[in-house]
Length: 185
Length: 392
Image 1 (cartoon, chains in turn orange, red):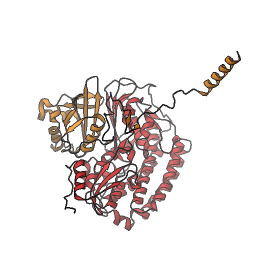
Image 2: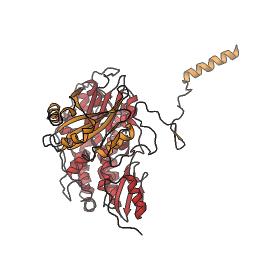
Image 3: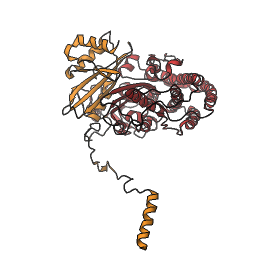
Image 4: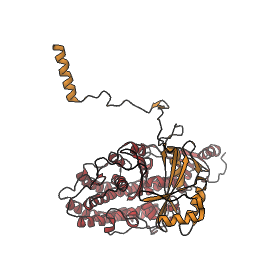
């Protein structure tokens, strides 16, 4: 099935909870209303025509200009060999949406990754804790306004750049030669 | 006094498991982060009752280098060497995924000759990666002999790739819109010579280890993954195919010049035990190497003579902000996906790399229940996880 056919089938079932199909380069995506995401995912998986048995990717994009965080779901159906993309638009100050771990187990780790790096909170997630960074880390690195904490348990997170005060060798020779001249004068 | 304990379930949180361990007197074993058979820096919190595991919780992140964040700060071309570090055993695929994603983003065309160069480099790299995988897997379960045999063959490939691009591990060979260097003179003959030699070695390798009775007894029926479970956990590549599902991105969603090449997709048949067990995953990789040889021979015969290695790509790549591209390639560890969102300037707004090892680690928690501790090592090895690819 094409993107349009899948979108029509979804729109027929969920009405205005599915937004219009938006083209972005070659892959079109459909924005959906956040509270309905689990219901929509269950329909995508169980409907015999759609049969999206696999959640192949889950990512999120931070847009400070629009004050939004987009959570992007990529679905793939091994049975029907078609794909679909769904987006949830969240408020940047309080990004929260229900977890789809109950639908696909693959969502467990993928959601934990987004929670850790982007700070998206997935409610009803069975084990929502940081996956890459230490549990007591502050901030979410993939946010655009992220500022790294200066140290973690007395380990500094910054170091002096080895290029500070770096002078090229030929310039150093010139500099020394000019200094010599000044001394002679 | 320890009390009888039901097997921990999926809905128990990490903290609850920890509390239960304290309460019941089960043993908590830290396997890793510096354990030789975890294939990199990974920690497993193993809750055991004697020799039998109740649960193994993977703790990853020791090799997190924030490559996705680096991708937002580099230019599109400048990010290419960093993608090598996503998966240092099969770096060529990470290169290709990034190149394809940006080509899709900007609508750039790649000359046919360059596509053939890419496929030759990638398939050589796939053999090298699978050799490491099968060699270390045999070593992890106790057969030390095949490992040097596998590494010896990998050295030949490393030499070939070094001649091609000057590096033996982190190649940085692909460019957006083509490849960096032309094939050196006489390269086709050298690759053909290697293939003649290697195909015989594969038969020898099968006699040595794949159909070895002790090896089969060790791995047959070990942690079988049914196809539905593999799909549910989003396993990809040889791990998925071993479960009996014939899906290869090169076949089903063909990219580059793969539509012109003929090869088969080896699928696990449950020859010695249950379908999708550890032996099937091993066998799939060995058979894939044979198919790589087939692909390489066709590439050498079909490669065009025009020697055009770069397409038309502007020096400064700029794409409209918010435009998205998605690329899927078949890496040595399966379906590797890049999701790129174009930024305002010369760099991307967001790069997301979805790798096969990351989702493969998610399944270990469930598979490990009721296994022996020694089997955990075989399970990790059979899933062919590479620590930097998990953490990125």
